[in-house]
Length: 470
View 1 (cartoon, one colour):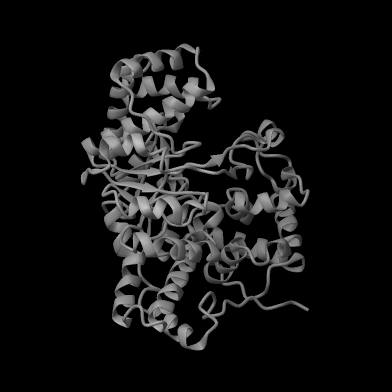
View 2: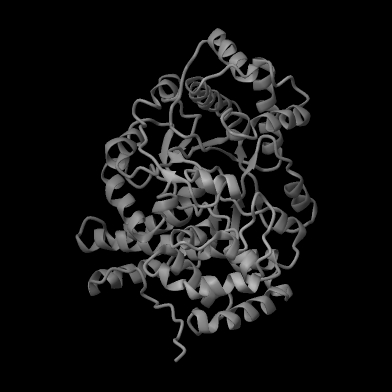
């Protein structure tokens, strides 16, 4: 018997009837607010070209490592899911890969991925029967037929989703051609990049040498000289600013910062570009560059985002066969109090610098991050991130940070996704969880109802717009 697909209107709200009623009322005031997505990894070429997507697998499964990492954990080879090996797609037919996902969909019970996908299926594609092996072909054909229509082209969905702002992420060595084409097209959708210089900072990255060559070509600077290298960053940042960019992003393995003298910087950089570096040198260089980037942010006004603490490509075999970003990044313990001190000693009291901190180490929320953001003017807390952008993770974030940092030292929600169609679902989850948290404070007489209504607006729209200077 085919089962129904239904999204309960009170999903994720508190179970207690009194608190649920308050949450429901708060949510009604923000449910339809425009989406502000200030940090993500959607392909900007989708909006530059506005071409039709072809099928459910390439749109919904292939870009979403949340999905295929779960399947991989159950012994399913990525080739069966049509996941490319170093950019080259396997022979697997897209329909067959979709059937594999449908057959194993029960694996996602209780996970955020299940909520997001069900939201996409029901709200975006209008499906009313459950996704399972028996309905795999129905889903694949229905989605494929809709994707062939103009109503499901990228720009049309952008408008339908009420997205007010969408940030992508490009490296210092990447072209901004797609963004220039968007701006020249006359379309009024606001899609901008984010300056991510990791490719020309992390000497341990296997593509560092090639990124540096491209960095030199784009800037015309001698990037193998310390002063030329810094000048190249300033040029590229200016290019990004001219394209509407307001933020940078730094995905370092740790939050380490340094404050070396100019002579020490030149000596260290000579080892980095000369190939005579150690792992300790690589870490120190990344640390110094966070401090250098903070100084440049004071100069040009760009907001810094620091996303540390992920051990990238933990599965060496999978990295060798399929390359980066295949679901094998694992959270690590992360220190902030000591790691950030060199940068904060130099810039921490600046009111012209804005740094948004993220973590994959939840143990730091109440011990380190909330007290830091609750003191230093330049620091704000990013939302629950990556492995923790779940209902439970979002609740833990609020519970562990609010008492020390308050609400106004946080920056709202960002989805940090490559899966474009899941953006409304992810923002809806965040709005529901925040309304549930605020409703509890009202029910406990810790907030007035009008204060909670104001905060719901702030957590959805106001904080993010101010934090990212939109």
